[in-house]
Length: 455
Image 1 (cartoon, rainbow, N blue to C red):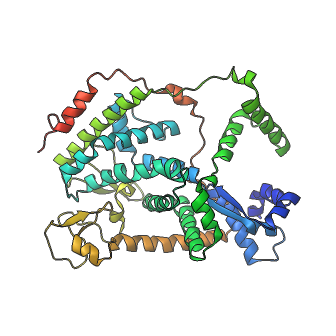
Image 2: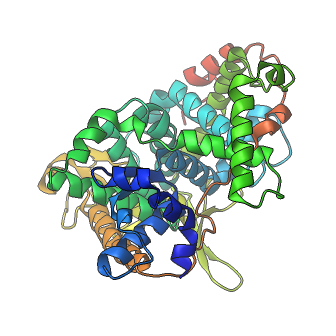
Image 3: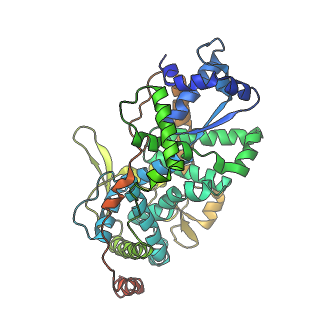
């Protein structure tokens, strides 16, 4: 049975007298990545559906697989970055003065840097761009507004700000927002595992399970980072010759000793300082803000010029082309409303079915791309019915698929499901930064309109 083979180590743990005694009275939360959760959940389902299953210890039902917040952060950051790669490639070349293309899948530290610059640069000029476009349903504008004002902040904040600072309700809300993003991107595995977490939270709240009180008060203790961090160090310092658990345990103890108690070894370890100073980062943020202004100016001068094309030699897929960027984007970049059955109507503000009012007064355009008059939005219960129906159907479809998968014993397809751990020593290959004399003046001129004309 393949499932049991993958749970061998867990099986040995559950047979330990100390573990058996503890699990008679308590549960053990298990924050993990996608495969880590799926194997345990499968074992629990097998045990619950067949009490005669002797190969799975009964203590397995006292384990509670949970969504690993660190993996959520890493995977969503990479997913957003890769999906919008043509945009970040243009930003990278503009900010760093490069002619060479950005790598298709950069190292995590560079992804984090570019996401940070995009976010901070956007904050500098956000109000000016929004004032310029006012109430607009232009597909290009809404797409990149969604990226800079919704997707990037969610990926940056979900772990470092919300999870680690114990903001439980905001954390759960952000997980839902990120799930809708994974659904748009067709990010298999993570579109299901995040939904499973939300389902657990709803069930625990509905049944008033005491674990909810623990999560609300001590959310940040359910963190897989300490284990994942040490695992990365262990992989970095061990060779392929380590083939047994005993030798791996020996190396792990030695590594832990060297890391915490051996000042002599530490004095010979190479230091890895971050390559950019605070002033460097401030200058890079301002250069990014200038790139944003120039980019949105192109969108302003080319309204409703987004092109949707079906391309592919064998299988035709939908792709998007935006003004100012020659490279195509996958259809997943478009806001949520474009994935519903009723896509936003560009030349008419209100997307409520049956609304005959053609005016653009007393209205708003949501981040999904749909627009509504205030009165129409209240009639709908202050929700976008088109996107609600799309998400409801997606929840039903993914729930059935995941439940069926829990009863299977085949191998798990991990392709594109997890961010691989990287040795970030390549931070030493960071791009040099030239002294940006006059950057403040240039940015002010752009914002004031002297170099950013209103057409």
